[in-house]
Image 1 (cartoon, rainbow, N blue to C red):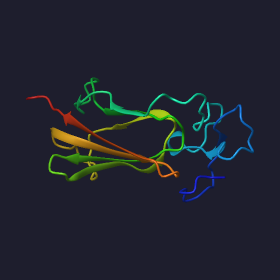
Image 2 (image 1 turned 180 degrees about the horizontal axis):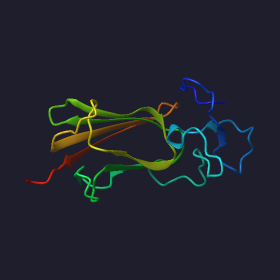
Image 3 (image 1 turned 135 degrees about the vertical axis):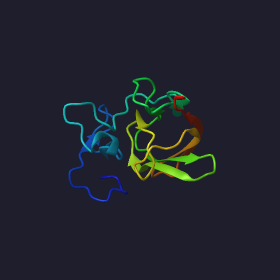
Image 4 (image 1 turned 120 degrees about the vertical axis):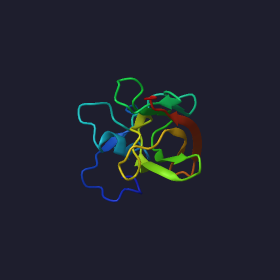
Length: 160
């Protein structure tokens, strides 16, 4: 009953998607998501889906962020919402020349809705230079449904 793409099932909880349906219904029990730490004891199940969400959505909280630790838009926040649980995400940041700057998520199972962040550091854990960037997000599920989003944004710095 666990998600087919998991490397290991050890420590991964099974959760009910719809509490109104019996456990024996196909697809009602699912592996807890990576985004929830593979378990949600005492909290709403990460795979919970009450009513379908009207549409899928992926957005940036702001199109400009400045990782200067001044308390204002220090992180690039990405928000997502899907009509049903079970999506897997691959999310990467590229510079204007198409060079990979940071791979944020790779085959990461998601809740039905949530968010994730980028702190402005590249793959070598160094601050990325100011400029225009492109966020590429690919979401898919085991039924073969694929959604792709590209969002431009700016990493800004203060003038000295």
